[in-house]
Length: 260
Image (cartoon, rainbow, N blue to C red; front, side, top):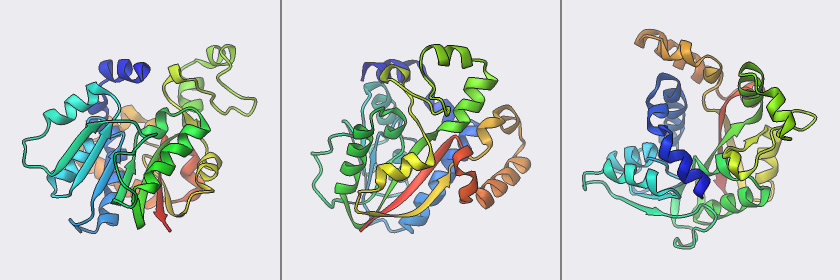
C-alpha cells in the first residue's frame, strides 16, 4: 500500500485522464459503461479502485447510485473534493481483495478499472475478480481493465532504452513477458493471462476491448490534434477497438464480463 500511496501522491493521474491521449481510454470506457447501463438509473454501480473518481463522480453526477472504493487516501481526498453534496455516491477507503462490507448480489455493474494494474500475484488478481463477481447480481456486468504487456515492452523497454536495466533486474522472461514486483507498481498481462484469470469464474465474456489502441505509441501526436482531427481519431479507434487481432498491442484493455 505504501508504494501506491507514494506513487499517487506525486503522480498527476487526473492530468493523464484529462489529456488528449488519456481521453481516448476514458471515452472508450465510458462508451461501454453507458451501453451496459442503458440509461437505467435503478442499476447500482460499484467501482473498486476508483482512483480520483474520474468515472465514479461522473456517473454519480449523471444520476446513478454509486459506491466507490479506493485504497489510497490521497486519491480519495481528491475524489471527495469533487462532490457538491447532491450526488448519490458513497466513497470509502478499502481494498479490492476484501469487499466484505458489501453483500452478495448487490450491484448491477462492478467496475474494476484500476486494481488489476497493480496486483502482482495471480492469486490476488483472481481474488479481486472473485470479490467483484460475488457482489454483482446474476446477469450483471463486471468490467476489468488491464495494462497490456507488448506496448510496455515496445515503448518503455526498447524505445526508452531500458532493456539492459530490465534484463539485469530480471524484469523480462525469455519470451519478453514483463515480471513485476510490488515496488514496480504496475503489472502487465497478455490476452492469454486475462483468459486464465477468468476461466473458473461464473461469467461469460461479452467483449474484450482495446481501450486506447495505438494511442500510447503516439502520445505527442494525439495530444497535438485539433478537435476535428481528434474526432476522426476517435472514429477510427471506435471502428477498430473490438478487433481481437489488435487487443495484444493496446496499452489498456477492457474486459467486459457478465455474471451467470
